[in-house]
Image (cartoon, rainbow, N blue to C red):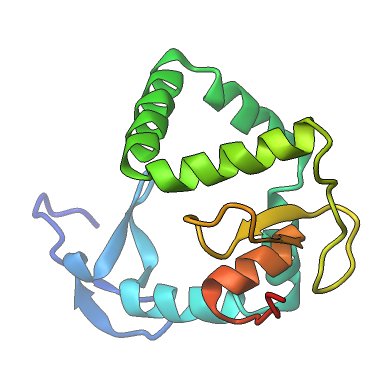
Length: 160
């Protein structure tokens, strides 16, 4: 029964405790969520550890729907402009890296060196990893996963 007064407390339907409205997330239709913030966070934490959810998250970026959205997003004029600004800023901040990358690209283009399989796992598709940007000829061919592992410090590769 509505007495015309503003409701200041609510009972959580999960833990059955009476709490102030500030302890509940806002809901677009009902005003506030039925569960308090603590119960909602605990549930979300458990749910995100379920195999079904983990598999969904792993495959999400492979979905065609997401791929189309990203392609459309990157075509927006504001996004193109911002990406160009960030690329230019990065290019100016790391001239030695860019010089080494260009040097390697030119060597591959000119046929002086050939792309190799991953030196760690043997995957056919590999990218060049520069151990020292001041010596652009010192490279290792690594697949994307192994390359990330080297940069994270998880994977060690012999440079000789």
